[in-house]
Length: 116
Length: 108
Image 1 (tube, rainbow over the protein chains, first blue to last red):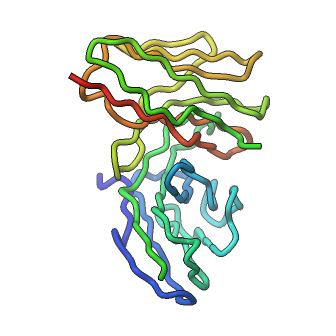
Image 2: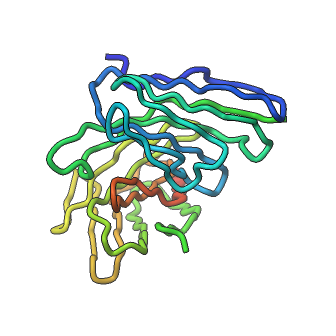
């Protein structure tokens, strides 16, 4: 199993450009989520999904869109990049069970995004 | 108010020392609690879950105090390889909230 994969690993954008960060998992996990990590801020939840066709907002959703058309993929779209979106982005997935919240999250290696 | 608060450290300790981290959370509805470890510029990885009765995994002991809304992590006999940032995580309502992390430096 590849686990959780993210592409690209690095990206530089200009202000106003749009792009999609890709995330895929091959563990058949229902729960997937996107975080951003800034220095001294820890990981902040952007959006999450509890299954295909279902998404919801996290702590910092503004400026980002997500969709979940399949169980495997959970892309994150930056609509119009801003310097404040310079960050490291992590995607994660988790197996669901009778009690979803007790399950470990598996993280991808991250995407380092710089917006000029 | 942040959902999860941690002392950022760094905690600088010699090899063999015992070190403890605390983490406080604001939402009393939080149901699950975890400690993750993150090495520099790497993804976080689960260190251990935290159960109501407390739990131990080798040199690591985690405790939960629901009344005071904090969780703790104790590391005994610190190794150089324990140097990392330790993140506490709480989960109310289908969301995982991460603390900003506590940095540990174990020195020879």
